[in-house]
Image (tube, rainbow, N blue to C red; front, side):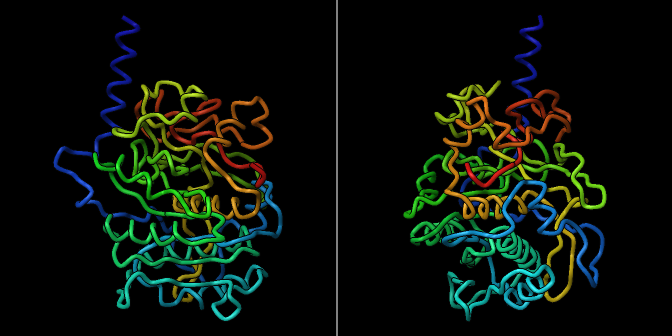
Amino acid sequence: MKKFTGLLVIFAFLLLSAAPTQASYHFSDYKGRPPIHVYGSSSKTPVGMTPAEIKSIYRLPASGGHGTIVIVGAYNDATLEADLGIFDKQFNLPACTTANGCLTKHPMSTKLSTNSGWAMETSLDVEWSHAVAPQAKILLVEATTPSGTNLLKAVDYAASRLNVSAISMSWGGAEFAEEISLDSHFVSKSGAPFFASSGDNGAGASWPASSPNVIGVGGTSITTTYGVFKTEKAWSGSGGGVSAYEKEPAFQSNYSIPRAGGMRAIPDVSYDADPASGFPIVDKGVWYKVGGTSAGAPQWAAIAALGSGVANKELYADKAAGNNANYFRDITSGTNGNCGWFCTARQHYDYVTGLGSPLTDLF
C-alpha cells in the first residue's frame, strides 16, 4: 500500500508540473514572461539588498569580471543607460556606458516598441549583472516581441557572438512538445553558458529553464539583521519540477536526482528571489525594490563572468563530489507549493532550489 501511495504522489506531481502544457499548446503559442515582482511602492532612495551585502552573502569578490555578459530581453528600454548611470553612482560602481564600450544595445528590429514590464526587467538584469561583475561588458539583445520565434532569434544572435562569458534569459513560459527540438539554440559559439529563470508561480516546469543546455535558476528568501546574513530558505514562488518532455540529462542521472523518473529536473541552482529580500533598481529615473527568479539569472551569469565559467556538468559533479559546501549553500527548508515531497526543500538536490545557492565564483 505504501508503494502504491508513493506512486500516486509522483503521478500527481508530474501532472502538476505539466499542468500549463496542453495538447493544443505549441511553440507558435509561446510568449515569454519576465518573472519580476515589485515590492511596495517606488522610493527616492534605494531600498533592499546592496551589492556589497549580496556579495558578502554569496562570498563573491568585490570587483572583477571578464568578457561580455549578454542579456536577452524584449522591446526597447529607452532610459536604460541613464538609469544605469544613477545606479552606478549610488553604489560607487564603475561607469558602464555606450561611450566607454561597456554597454551595447542590439535591437533585433529597427522599430522597437516599449513595454513597461520588460523595461523594468531589463533594468534589473543590466544593473545587477554589472553590480556583481563590474569589469565585464554588457550586451543587451532586444527581441522585437516576446514571442517564442522572436526570442529565439535574439538567442541565436547572442549565441553567435564571440568573447561572451554568459547569456542570461530572465523570462519563461509553459512547456510545449516542440521544445526538445530547440535545445541546439542554447549552445554558444563562445562556449558561454545559458541561464534562465525557473519561474515565479511555485511548483511547475518552465521553458527555457527546462532545456538541458540551460542552467535553470530557482529562488530563495534571505533574512538579514543590519545587513548581516542570518538565514536562506526556499522562496514560495520558486518554479521547479519535472519536465514533461525533456529526458534526464547525463549530469543529473549521474548525480541520481531523486524521483525524476528519467526526465529533466528543474531548477539546477538558486539565488535570492523573494521581493521582501529583493534588490533596488532604477527604472525611468525612479527607485524600486524588486524580486523574482529573474533576479538570479543575470547574477548567476555575472558569477560566470567573475570566475572561469559555469556548466551544468561541473555544477552537479561539484555537488556530488562530497565537497559541495565549498560551492553551494544547501537550502534545506521552505516550500513552493502543496505537493508534499516535490515542493519541499531538503538536503542536497530538491525541486525548489536545485543544488543550492552560490558560495563562490570558482566553479
